[in-house]
Image (cartoon, rainbow, N blue to C red):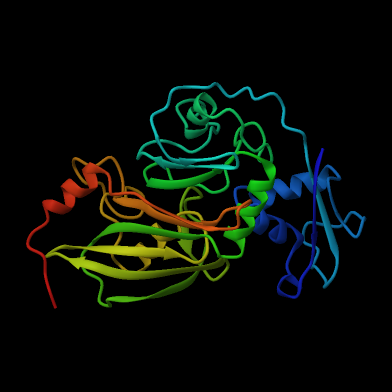
Amino acid sequence: MQKQTFKVEINDVGKRLDVFLQERFPSFSRSHFSKLNEENLVSVNGKKVKSGWKLKLGEIVEVEFKEPQKISTEAEDVPFDIVYEDDDLVVVNKPQGVVVHPCSSTKNGTLVNGLLYRIKNLSGINGVLRPGIVHRLDKETSGLLVVAKNDKAHISLAKQIKDKTCKRNYLALLDGNLKEDCGEIKTFIARDKKDRKKMAVSDSGREAITDFKVLKRFKNTCLVEFSLKTGRTHQIRVHAKYLGHPIVGDKVYGKEVKGLEGQLLHAYKLSFIHPTTLKEMTFEVSNPKYFEDYINKQKIEIFY
């Protein structure tokens, strides 16, 4: 078993136990930690409590992760670019159309299959289906991801995402033009009650904060930079729809566009503190060719 221990600080007082753990390991769901709790692998001050336990200052939370089984996920030569690699981590540029990790509907051709083919060691905290995966991108979203090669790096990177010190910037082409040049979108996001595969703005959801800045305006579209302050599922896509200007090509929250495989959303910039050297690292990648080609087809740029 791999045991991780945390002390409840002032900012975490009153949080549910499962929420507290999910924030520290964002690639896991709350239900995953509830399941670990049912298996007596989670404790507070050495005692078993319910997943909805409200944490108190100074309490000691322990969670045990089962030792990774021998990875049965098949190694495959999946195309993706390695932007940077060292003994602790790998930064990759995920293409559009590639799922990050295997699931019930997609068992092969994922980024994890490709990582197993090209990377010798990966963090085992996330188990056999998600080795090394610290955060995710949607299938049709392209761009930068950091992958952990050991558990120490994984814990450090996951904490930075939880603490909002890991900076993730995206470029998106939106349908129509935003009224404001820049601003902050602050809502709550939850599962759509009518379609569980979708997310929606809802008062019953979890807080979601996104900053935006319009970079270019065209006659019928605008190029926008988004910066995540939280990391909810489909957050940028949901917020773009909330503003009344869904991402071009988003088949779920907008409309399908002929010639596009999915939404024009690209994670172009990623910054974090290296787990070992403690130096800030920043990576940037250009938009994919299909993204730039579509931008170049837009009618004359509008200046204000």
